[in-house]
Image 1 (cartoon, rainbow, N blue to C red):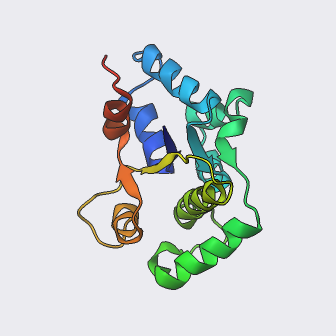
Image 2 (spheres, helix red, strand yellow):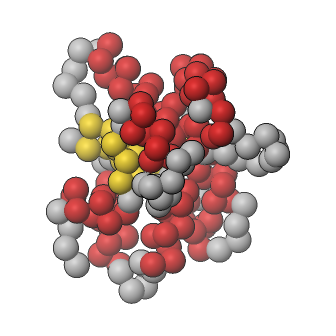
Length: 165
């Protein structure tokens, strides 16, 4: 089963290109994935969205979305340090007080994979969902490729789930 770790860029894209009042069924399907634990995101994604002042901010604050956002733990903090050591461009030293979800996306996924392997269960396929360009270096998809994590955009998520509208 796929579990999607979603980036801020994809949630913004969802709001802009697929507004709820035009695509209610799509939003319902996204809600179903959230409730089943198949869409997750680091809490930093929520913090990035909360900087804005619109309906997406209200949406992420809804009780139904609480389970989607993963709070950091010690293992994730260690992973972020490792990731930033190998991919320092993911840090934003010029904006130290602003939320930065990028390294946390990888930390959440890598820790989840390790935990499932330790429990010796059949583990999920973790996929990062981002709207960042697949062709540009120093972006989430490039790091995904280098460390062996699949990355797709929203349309890719819709295709993976077999959704047709």
